Image (cartoon, rainbow, N blue to C red; front, side, top):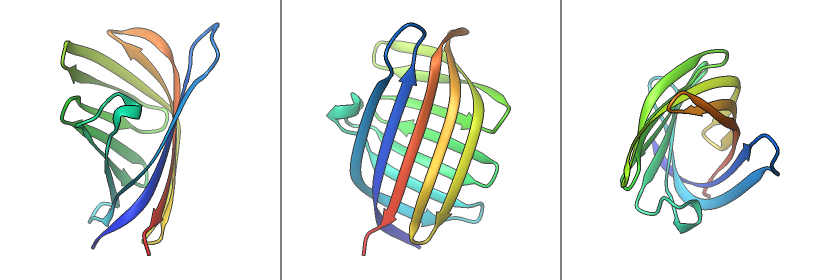
Length: 141
């Protein structure tokens, strides 16, 4: 059953020689139980620079798939200790994105939960930094 949920997404980016870049967004989205696990979805805002984009996290015990569709189109696969390559389509062109997942922690129930993903990212095969998603989900009552 799909239900409304408050979703807080904290994104952290770490670059060599620079202070961490952090963003945080709290928005109303949805939480849905699927055959494979959980689906969390929300609309991006101006704050993230991706207004007009819907972001979904398909969460399974050992794998998370992040999909964006709208002004940005992408699919990123996170599996601890593994690397995946995908395309990131934006208004001005397409980039190749390599993601190597360092750690993946997901604890989700019908009441909400936490998803944390730490990963390295390379754009067009050049390492650009380390990132972390920390997502807190709370079912709306």
